[in-house]
Length: 264
Length: 193
Image 1 (cartoon, each protein chain N blue to C red):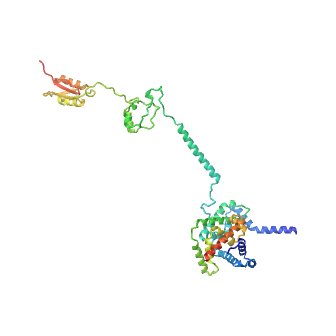
Image 2 (cartoon, rainbow over the protein chains, first blue to last red):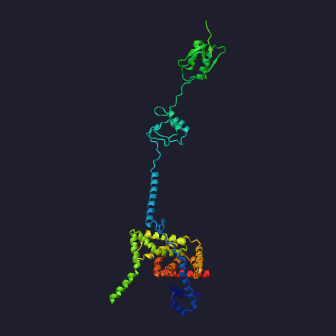
Image 3 (cartoon, each protein chain N blue to C red):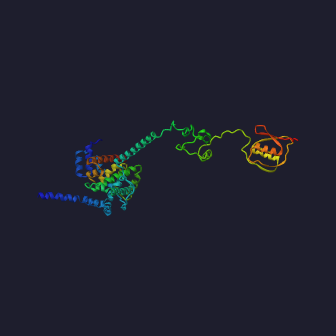
């Protein structure tokens, strides 16, 4: 059974008011809605009664201020949010612009000036320097000008080796000029006393890297030796003069000692 | 005679506004930092606020908690109170809004447990007039509908006061009340089957 909305509202109003006279008047006018009106009146009465069931009010506690942030807590206003977003955006734009400018204004790779001497012109190696390339390459021998700095210092081990390559002026090592071939190392003084000639020759052979050959029956007297910083051939000739043998160079760091025959 | 006619309504109006004036004085004292004035307001309105909270939340503990939060809100925002309005309607509005928020937060909780306990207690105490279907229907209502019914039937607010408490116009309050009643009736019939 559908009820017109205005009648429905009227019934609720009568039920809310609780006026018996108004209810009787309505029932006389709309006897078919008598039951609906009674239903609403009972519902309203029950709702009002239900309050008693819920209203067992507990003992009123002392008021305590709740610390939990509620809806009245800090809420950023729209203006604050907008201004914060604007500031952040501006900062972002500035950062990006600054980065782009910095990249664009970065110094270009230095080019060789025609007036500069080649020794002052740093040559960037094609590959990152390695230990061997640092020590052995020709670039390393070219002194770097003071305004040209290596971007990365060499590790200590490399530095040590590199410093060994420098002279007192800080320049790199100068290639040693090739000298005429001489037998053995630099002249040095050798002093021996009361040693056999064969032992002395053996020592000279070891010291100077000489191959010394003697003929069978070569004498082996006890000798005293003071070389006075001579080279290997000089030493051998001195000894030969003193003890009677000659020195024949055979090349390839080899000498032959020949006993001199006594002539009348 | 004409003078008497003008004076009498003024006096009546003054006496009607006594409660409003008393609350306004206490509000002023609270704003100036008088803690005792707030204690007075708290004591005066505790039961009404609790009734609203309980009616919407249907849970005693949650209602007690909500009451503390409601008075905390009042304490912190008393300076925002528009002195042209009645303090009680402002307080009820905060109570309704806060209780509805809490009820929505705890929507998934099964309220009928406590209702059944309350009904069982009522039956033990011999209160046969309580219809269990009423409580079940109330429990199934939306919190906002419950708030309208509670304020109108339990707190016996006028439509004007109901409108102020719900934060709407009197006509809107009337419509909301009508819809709440209709939903309640529908649920009641459903429960009765």
